[in-house]
Image (cartoon, helix red, strand yellow):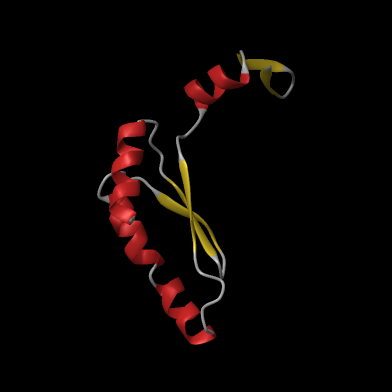
Length: 93
């Protein structure tokens, strides 16, 4: 696999795993909310995404929200260390 820039300049090459390892931005976490909640509780749940981000940023300060829907929030952690991801998942439980 190769990564090219116009006009055909080679930026990187290698297997998908090696490119992800060297060029990727790290792990992503998707938090899904209970879809069976009453509408009034859904808005409260969505308001808590800031609290979730604050919890995540205790371990991954550069983490950001990349997608927010009625039923889920996606966070880009910007870290590659699986031990940090484990700490975040424990904190979110």
